[in-house]
Length: 131
Length: 211
View 1: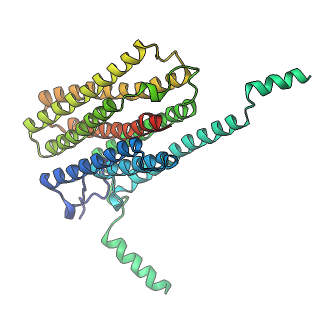
View 2 (view 1 turned 180 degrees about the vertical axis):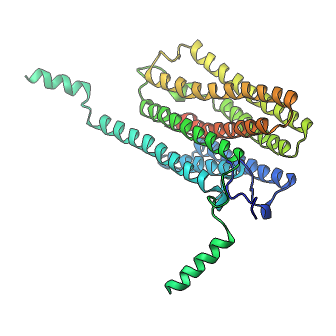
View 3 (view 1 turned 135 degrees about the vertical axis):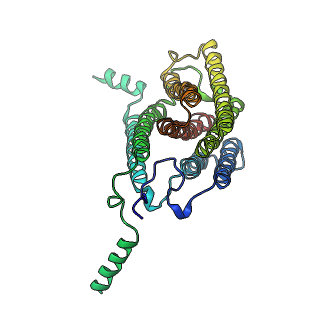
C-alpha cells in the first residue's frame, strides 16, 4: 500500500497494479489505435475528394474527423485516460487545448472581421475622388 | 443526509489515498510531466502558425494557390509513413519496457526509415515548388505554407537526430533509468508530432484542395 503510486507519466501505460498490462495487450492497444487512425485518415481523404457530399459541409466534416483522430492518438498512443492517476496530464492537456482554441479561433474571427470591414480598393479610390 | 455523505467520503478516502498522500511522485513521472508541458507549449506555437496560415490562405498575390500546387498522392504517402512510424515507435516503447534489445533496435530502425522517407518526400515537394517559382518569397500564402510545413519538418528532423542519439545511448549505457526516461520523452515527442501532422494535412492539404 505504501509504495502504490497514484500518478502516471504521460505516455505510460496504466501504473495501477490491478490493471497491469503485458506486452501482448500493449501491442493490441497500439494496433487498435493504428487501425482506427488509418480508417479516419482514409475517410478524411475520401471526404475531401468525393462529390457525393454537400461542398459547404466538407470543411466541417474534415474538422470533425481530425478531432476524432487526435482523440485516437491521445488515447491509444499517448495513453491519456480519465483515470485518477492521470489527472495532472489531463489538466495540462485541457489548458493547452484552451490556449490553442483561443489563439486559433480568436485570430480567425479577427481576420475575418477585418476582411469584412476592409473597403475594396476601387471603392476607396472613388471616395478620394469625391473630396 | 449530510452525515451520510461525510461518512461516504471518508470511506472512499481511505480506500484510495490521493496523490499527495502517496508521497512525492517518482522521477519518471515528474520528468514525463515536464516534457508533456513542453510539448503542449510547442503545440501552442504550432497553433499560432496555423492561425497565421489560415488567415493568409487567400493572400496569393496573383501567384499559384494550394489547388494548383498540392499533390494529394504524395501527401497520402507522407501521412502513411508518419502514422506507421508512430506505431513502430509505440512498439519500441513496449520493447523497452520488457528490456529486449533486438526488438528495440529493429523498431527504432523502422521508425527512423519511415521518418526519413517522410522527410525526403517533403523536401522533394518543397524543391518542386521552388523550381516552378512558388518559393516562400512569392506570396504571403506561400510564406505561411513554408513556415508551417517547414516547422513541422524541422521537428521531424530533430526527432530523427534524437532517435539516433538515443540508440547510441542504449548501445553504450544499456537500459538505465536515465536512458529510459529520455526514451519516454522521445516517444511522447514523436506521437505529438503525428498529432500536429493530422491537423496539418487536414487544414493545409485537404481543405486547401476543397476551397
